[in-house]
Length: 365
Image (cartoon, rainbow, N blue to C red; front, side):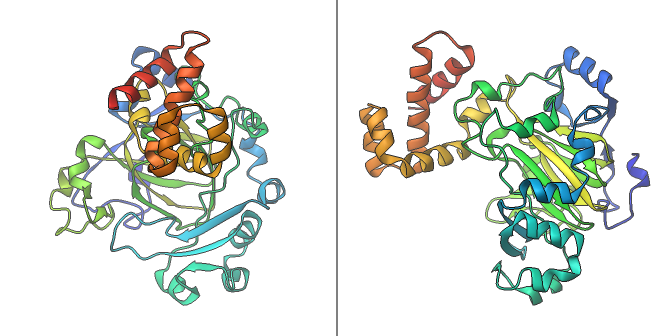
């Protein structure tokens, strides 16, 4: 949809700044574009229509009752906003299960009784004062590449987009890379950059969303150490005096469309109508080095190693890793454990992906 048709003020950026409309492609056009320029997503985001047409999820996941039946028992948190990315932001959050959250989405007026005693940040009074709906975005439904849920979103990656996820050890165990977002009008994901330097997309199953994106090249304009990310709908001039110099890329994401962006692109997303969205993280040759150097998966893998201390000591006979388990940080443990896993995998044959990761990690040491 043309951004000029977007809802005024609430959904759009400050009037003083013109936005660059994110280009839209039919699926075949996007595939051809990727073939011509595999690095196009480093340059600008894209909206793609037609990619999700054959997904089973495109119809089945519009049904909130189906989602509750399939995933209702899984634990989640729900926040207003989804999370905070600026020290000045206030947030309320509940700890619940996905089924109860779906009940809230269906009947938001029941927020008081559904979440009585479940507030882990703020309270009902503060929540009502904030004027934002609760938004859950951390349900964990994928932990390995063979999860049955992938049958619902097949193919999960556009055919012309290289994907190396399955070649990366512990990829789905060291972070959530498959996201299911269910939200009501007004739900907010504030400006942020994704962990692990991934390529990412939003696939709109139901409803509409408004998105603003910013290139990592402009980060100095929208991010300040000690403060966080700016609010692109209401920038604080004192903290972000150069915000007008950052190019804004804007789109209204309609049902059946995919919004995809490259690594480190900052994004701010607001739900315009009750919505179901699938998001997925991708690593390929354009961002493998960035992924390998990131700290996020290291923390997760290190935490896993600590929780399985006895098993790791028994199976991984590496003195440096054992020493780190005694007194190292989670990040250092995770990096060393990945080195051990990569070395073991390469003993049975060459693998350019694992070799590149190993070379990067060993060079750091």
